[in-house]
Amino acid sequence: MKSKSTSVGTRSNWALARRDLLKGLGVGAACLPLLSAGRALGAGAPKRLIVILTSEGYRQQYWKPQAGLLASQMLPPSLAPLEAHKNDLIVMPDMANVGFGTGASGGHGSYGSVFYGLDPGRVSYKVPKGSSFDQVIAAGLPPNASGRPSLPLHIQLERSPQSNPSSPASNRAFWVKGQPVNPIGDPYQVYQEIFAGGAPATPGANTSPADKAAVDHLMLHRKSILDYVGTSLDNFKKRLGAEDRMAIDAHHTSVRDLEMQLQSAGASDGKCAPHPGTKIDITDGAQYPNILDAHLWLMTDAIKCGITRIATMQTSDSSGNNINFAFVPGVPAKGTGYKTAFRNYHDLGHNPVLGNVDHKRIVDTWFMQQLATLIERLKMAPEDGGSVFSNTAILFGNHMQDGSNHDASRLPWIMAGNLGGALKTGQCLADQKPTNGVMTELCNAFGVMSPFGYSLPEIRA
Image (cartoon, rainbow, N blue to C red; front, side):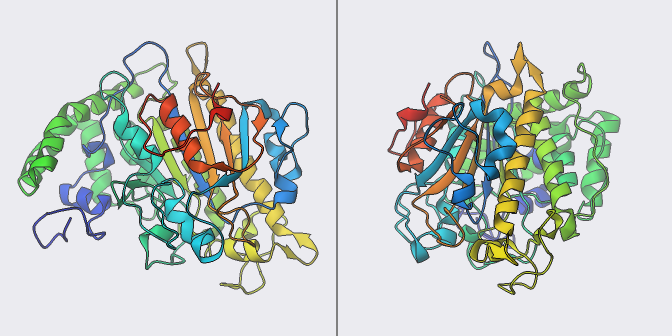
């Protein structure tokens, strides 16, 4: 799209992001008819996908298990938080981001293509031409039979300023037809947008008073979302091309379905009540773990309540220069001076050991604990005689093997959950495998045709 001061044409300008569109309409993501709403209408629980991207790889000697069954071995120290869940895991320690290697053609420069896998061309920070695999799945799910994600729940926890703001591929890893899926960093804003029909969120530092007022208005008067935004959408539609006008028309019913879900969630038996949170200063870098925890709860609640079937998160940008890991016990505030004065993500990657202590190993273990926490929360959410986790897959990815080598040909990935029996868990893969194979197997598990050109039968049940 062109900037807001000109007519709307093809989507080629990064300036008009999703947030700009919402501001123009005066509404939140729950009102945006870009993805079809609706829960699964078929028999059984719907399948869900959560994709989380971390950075700077892992210290392999403390993280990588032996190839084979995980039940026959104790997990390495950095994976120890996942010991109780090892039968639910597929550890994939040597995944190759096709077309990328090391140095300039790998590592940080491969960040934007880590979940794309098509025509990377060994170009550092190259912007994908198409959609990342999560959005391929989203677009391929039938809107009425299986339900498509009702909103693009996408989160990023990078601290400002960005490490490399000149390229969107340095801080965006999820894409729709070559356009970045723009994340939300404020958990209060996410809360308002996905639970707009429930209780209002505690305003965060970046919460718009206008957005909160709109949510309160919907709650108090039980107005239809379409009644509230219909005129704005119709006016906006006049500025669009034929294809986009048809998309808005086609999704009016989906937005109405979403409204029904949001309203019914508050009147349910309580299983869809969002987790109560506490006040967090989201401008405080030391609050990173609390912000992350709030987002993990929001992802759990959105998945369990049927508000979305696909959720994605970036824990930093491609380098994490501005994240100070002093909040992790055992990690000092002061680093080596690489990029910043504090012990940042990038500093940890290149200088893992400081004062005879391996701080990167400590941080790696901390992130594995966050994954364990998410698994536990999904397991505690009952569904159809099992749990929400029973029908969910979590892909915990990384875009380099280790921060010290920038190797994008041996990425350390983990999958948790078997998607209702579609995936073969409890194993660590041997040998080097293409990331595209994982993408294909997940597409197949959701009944969506894969464009990624590889398969990975080793993880198929």
